[in-house]
Length: 279
Image (cartoon, rainbow, N blue to C red; front, side):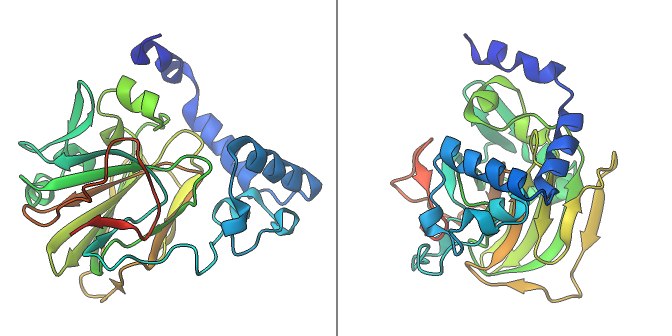
């Protein structure tokens, strides 16, 4: 079956209603039902609870408490690198931004301007720069960390669809990461501007950041923006900057001549937070 045919049902599903329902279930504190759901999820997706700061499945009061669980302090050491990987997951794609276009999958690309919600002036800062896209599967650790030191300047909520972001959907839905709901976080760094985008997906109940808390819901039909130039919000390399309440994808943008990606990286290769991403 072709990828386009495989994703056809997603166009027909009531994705927003499913996402709202999933968020309600994930937030519910339902005692034995919650424990049973977590235990099923751990078994189905082979979640490595040995890495969790709290490995006791029965102690989590909600599915979201489990899903956003912290890890033990010793399991994700930070590489001595210019840029470290911000998440656990798998590399989707990475490489140059060509004429403002970001490569998604064979036959598909999307514009940096569309990704950031239509701000052409912001996107222009990354002309001829580089991007990296990392997919977080259900089994992965779902906290997001800073790949470098950065001072927060803007956050942009961009409304959109809620397609799945798994590899099959990335190959089958044109412009996927610029169509889905997303939160664009803009930083100033010693290397120039940097963007880290949290991309939502089907049943991703919400996305949150360390400085704002939950960004969505509520879900708006309009682009929303917050500015932080006068608040001096500084996040250090390796510091937590956000969370997915159910999993998704991050897309990073770097200015020209800023990053040389890890030579061991390739599409679909697994990565962990803290590993060398670039120099």
